[in-house]
Image: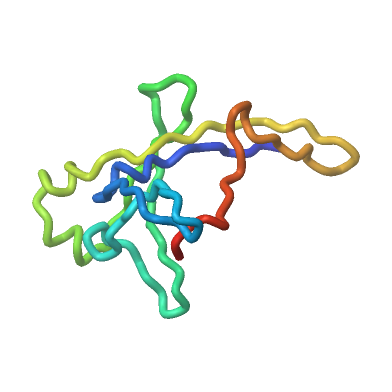
Length: 124
């Protein structure tokens, strides 16, 4: 069974990193991403989406695709080619194969040194 793994560099969007005070009073490092300035879609249910498009990549051998933000047609048509080209690539994808055991895919483990974040100290 094939899987695709990738990373998206959210700091490539118009953003800033700030320390905000958590519930316990300790600073919590946060990435602040303006919704409208980044052409994100904010649904009535509260979800926020970043539309992306993937391109086959031949420049970086270990990655099969590159990821770029996909803009709404009406916005893209109002931009010059220079403005359109100024949107950065956000990340890369690689095709992976997984071992199958007893009809299911083995669960992947987090890479060494990566831990699930603790969310109980966020200010929101």
